[in-house]
Image (cartoon, rainbow, N blue to C red; front, side, top):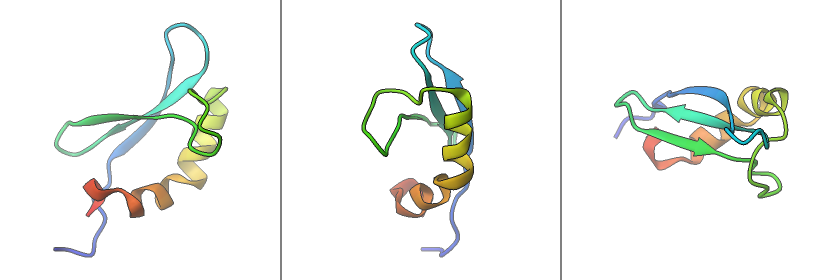
Length: 70
């Protein structure tokens, strides 16, 4: 197993009903996941800015712990 982290693309996506945003994770093999607010367990991020802040500040830690990253 390699020590390098497989890096997906991450982007904020608005929820269709207008209740907030989630982060779409797209892995190099095309598999997608949705990330909601992991700090509070609330369904979505409240705003696009909050989702972008999570991507910039917290996604690296999430990636280190995620099994697909290995």
